[in-house]
Length: 309
Image (cartoon, rainbow, N blue to C red; front, top):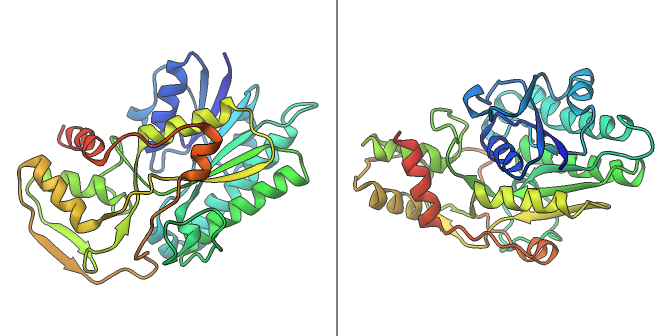
């Protein structure tokens, strides 16, 4: 069995990935500064290094002896990248470059492969949906620009430094452990908790914005399959379902699952928000022979059950 580093492993996606890796018999080290990750998310058998992903010494300590890296640590918020531009840039781009740099120098003779999280935010508000990986990036937020920067640095990591990388452009990932109390969290976790508790729901804009929601368990399956395939090169894939869901449709389904109606409070649309975001999953499906198999009802049911606990 192998030993893997998961940066951001106490967070939403990272903790699910760490659980799955341990379940397959692998050893797991987590690097997390606990700014948004939670200790209760950490699997008991995972080693935790508390540190900053942009700190080379912390990354080197955490990466010592590992066979591969899943780099998920980031400030994953368009709104926060607007409020704390330089700070989020340091974490998102500086952290990725630090991980790639250590991956090329940590052991003699071979680089450590890195699977990392990119984002559909690199596409911006592109009406040519479903969005394929060959669409010209046109990010509208500092977060999207940072994620595009990570992809470009990943290409440098491979072409100049021989570090194999695979980036996944996550669309709207949801599921248990996504913090519903954070103003920067995903719409599903926030809506699920508020609907279940009979609280009012804020909708930015008219609610007709369309998203491609992908369940966290499917994301984990693709991440693990990518590492098993032994990355070579600097590939980038969409991680999505290809199925569109509007914000108002999402709210309707959550109300049906919870058996409750929520009062809708419409707010002004936020600058940088995307109107339509639907991905084409064909390239990742062909590469790994996988699909995002969890339907919206099944995924929302699991999320609601967790949110009301």
